[in-house]
Length: 268
Image (cartoon, rainbow, N blue to C red):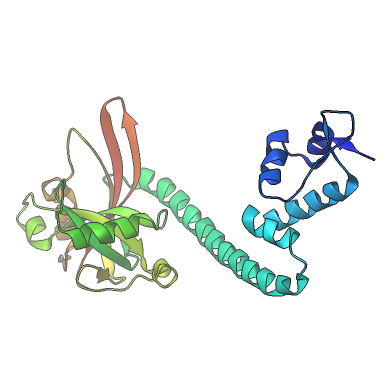
């Protein structure tokens, strides 16, 4: 029995345009019935198309599927399926890391709202950082820009990060840097290692706070005097550069706003 393209598309849950696209790859070849301008599919085509949906779900491209459908060498399939299994396993690992990262971001949003301009003592996470900006000016060095491009591709595991030098904080100066950061727990997965451009900041005792900034009042070391006063009031001593994770960006009309989680390393 023969079936019209619309009937087959409805049965398989695809569009008629999708069916015609499969025809271009030689996956199905509808037949013309004698004495009619309509093209028809038979039950063999329907079962071929069911198999196509199965192969697509396993990650095969249409070209790969066409090669499979039009080949008599089914012995090649175990090796092909082994490759797709590896791809699926990689996707599972990636998605598990995505879930973990989403959970971390959710916790950061919740915590930061209650920590604006407030302070507590805690251990910071281990962080890998690169600097890409002197204040709000991008570096022109090609190696830095190339690395920035590579790191940006690692989103959402990469985040914008400010660096506030110890010397500038101590004298209430105005110099600071911006760049990108990646938490240590994702370093192996993302193949991130310290080198001339990548600096590692290990977990250590810090004063932590959350601080908003916007495009009308840019955050700099001079705006962090409250944290320095808290460090002094607690009898602590700044040990190293402070750094931030900037995880919230949004627009309010023409004004850009963000939120920094900032860690100030202190001597133990």
